[in-house]
Image (cartoon, rainbow, N blue to C red; front, side):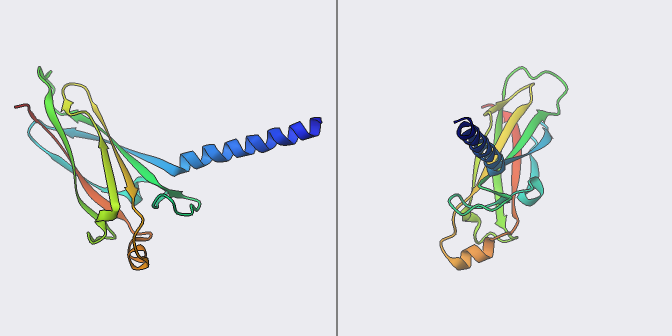
Length: 162
């Protein structure tokens, strides 16, 4: 009886470790600090290949070691103004120039979701951009995007509220 319970406990421990490891590999995060000025936008080029050790793949595919279904790119954004800002400023984050393998033809497969405050004042603002990839509709499209770098530009702006 003790042997059976021990074997069951070991199996549950191994399965639990696998689930935790998969959850960690399934979503990776990269961080970067950004300083912006009031009324001045700052644009940063992001290359997902440089942001993570994982390979972004569409949800629902057979996962291999190193594959992830989403990548979180995190930024901490500060104002460069050294004086205290009395009123909150509008804070705008935009993503442009999405490309896969240096071309925009399949950029529609890349999904981005921005999580950030709509205002910025004296404290840093945390910005998280979650990137996922849709399943290509054909083998030709799949071959065109498989293992290619995904790049995009992120622009951060702070302006006076109107």
